[in-house]
Amino acid sequence: MPLSRPASAADIHYRVEPTDLNAHLFTVTLTVQRPTASQELSLPVWIPGSYLVREFSKNLQALAARQGQRALQTAQLDKHRWQVQCTEGKPLVLSYQVCAYDSSVRTAWLDASRGFFNGTSLCLRVHGQETQPHTLELARTAATATWAAATGLRPLAADKQGFGLYLAADYDELVDCPVELGNFWVGRFKACGIAHQFVVAGAAPSFDGKRLLADTQKICETAIRFWHREGKAPFKSYVFMLNAVGDGYGGLEHRNSTALICGRRDLPRQGEARASEGYTTLLGLISHEYFHTWNVKRLRPAEFARYDYAQENYTELLWFFEGFTSYYDDLLLRRAGLLDDANYLKLITKTINQVLQTPGRSVQTVARASFDAWVKYYRQDENTPNTTVSYYTKGSLVALCLDLALRREGKATLDDVMRALWKRCAGGPMTEADLRAVLHDLAGRPFDKELVHWVHSTADLPLEELLAAHGVALKADRPQLAQRLGLRVAENHSVQIKTVLRGGAAEKAGMSAGDEWLGIEVQGQGWRISKLDDVTFYAGTHTTLQALVARDGRLLRLPLEMPSVQSTGVPAEGRRNTAAPSMAPDTISLTVTDPAALGRWLT
Image 1: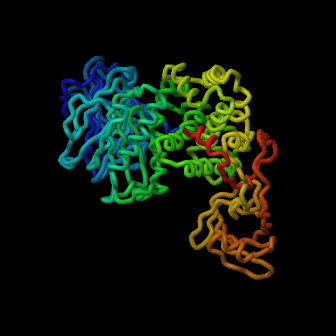
Image 2 (image 1 turned 45 degrees about the vertical axis):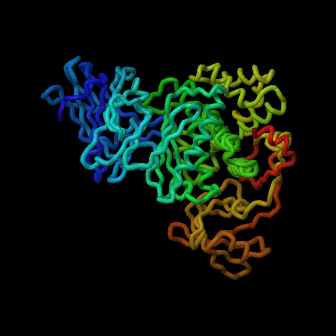
Image 3 (image 1 turned 60 degrees about the vertical axis):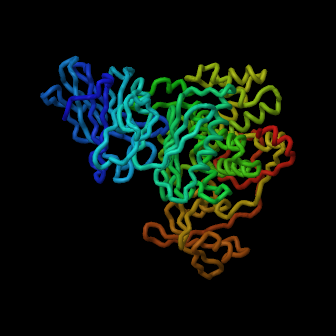
């Protein structure tokens, strides 16, 4: 292993080389110019923005250390920490491999066509020197001779294809700038004078890159001007990295870049003027992750002032940072002219229904959902809807209610609140007390009561009243059969039960997640079902029947009482859910009653 390194490299220098594409192996060489006598190193157990301990060290292998020609012993201290006994102040060189086989945005991937990595997966942290400048060298191999590289790191000596030397101010910046490698499509534009790069891997020949750039530019300019009316942003450049796959969706925010995944068919297509539902969803994802550049990467929970990469970092504020971002992602699409009023209201309707149809909203507050993200939101199972509420969806409705309440009183909007928080917290750590203070200052009264009810209790939100004040009527519609039964299912030649919702007819009958619903018996006759609608077809007006299910190799007859098709109405304003949790019986729809009032809200 050569000890040479670029002359301009920092005291902490990483050389990353994609050495074995078919084995998914990166080789990393870490040089520490001035180590301590007992130098400790570690690999993060999680990545900021994705609140789950993922144990990245499981992919690290063949760790070796030396000074000069002398090999050193490394002692593993626990699951993610190592210690090297070495001569203090003399360059220490470590080499190791990382197996990169996770194609998500959270870790690392390498094969014969593409490479990607986050620093949290590849870069050992040098304890005691985290605040020093770090350099990253992206090394080319014969197998990657035609590849290019893209990253948000500042280049020091990179070639035209992006391979070479990059600088990070500290370890936090190093691991907050992912790297994309491969023969990807590249597009560029400026938003408010700021250079943006968009790289897309895996796109089909029908991909319309020109349209993606134009639409993304509108999103970026709308977001920048939202936060800074003068059009200045807290970054000098920005990189979008999108991996188009057969089926997938997701994103992870970073300080001046984002990593995204979408279905290949969701990309815009040449010759198609109409935006597909999938493409609209992709634009919402782009808007969401870009808004995070301000709201969570800079304006962030006080608990995240310095990340602890060794363990969970708890906060009760994800309802604000994820939820409010989820409110603004689609609203900024509307303001950018990429959504009309009707389609925007469809998205609001979908969010409201998702919350109302989650029994866990009666069990868990959205603040507690934020705190429990590490063990509940990112570890979902068949019972999750019964015990939890999403800080994304309910958090976005809290933002909606705050915005509409402020607008009704006429002194401020949520836009004003967000910009005032940015100024108050200097674009840095904040607490809920900061939000309460800004609301009081701008509205001329405290909003503590609303925050207690909407965030720290399981009370339903006053959506009907607030929407009505802005020209939108909320109406309860007839629920679908799955909702009336209290089921979430998959249909493929039979009905596979995925979730049994609390308090529903299916739970009372004794159905369980994992059951296969094969048929029903009605008045002595048996009928095979292949989809849920077959139940009503064969049962007709009969409300008492036997459900035939398969569970663990056994056939069971379960007595099922079909629920009424009548809706019981929208949850009352401000009602606290003190009774036993139950499934929401209603599906709501939104109707515009005052277009002028709606226009004042959306623009």
